[in-house]
Image (cartoon, rainbow, N blue to C red):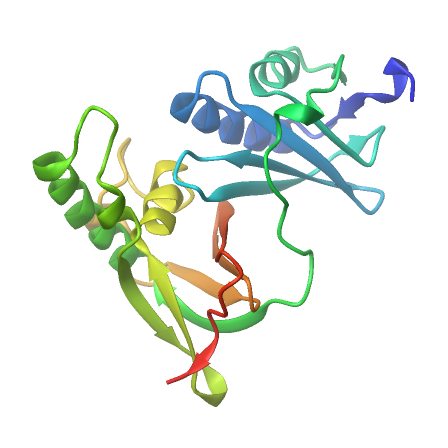
Length: 223
């Protein structure tokens, strides 16, 4: 594989801005963030990042990628996007990526939940974290706590932990009025889709998705 192939081309300015916004949020959570770029067909590229909540975030944009799958520094991609030219991805940092990605298919749609309710949960969780957190962040007991039970067809049930809710709001994937994500600024009709496989949980919001591997457990169970 030569370096000439490691090029990301995002000709649409709107898609370039979408990806730049996604990477900006990832770097805000981790200044040393890496992004894993994966080609989906001939015209789509999925960008994956770790959020710091043991939960992955992804945004898919219309773009062309010269390789199937590569991990590079998020800051370098962001700087390249701002030039408006194809981004030379340089040397890969594949060893910096830890863990697997969720499958591209096989997810069951459990139900759609109001985005405002998820942000309210994040707000309450943030209050608890401020009260009981340390310099290392929120306590693990809070992050691992199941804060929402979603039940779908055939009585399938999935538990959503706080760390997944925090990841969704930290990446600012839910549309809102004003500069800050606050529950009162979110339209009551805005929804987040909850999907799952036997080992992965995924929340799909308007501006991106978050996914968490459930440690080999089976999250789908009859209620």
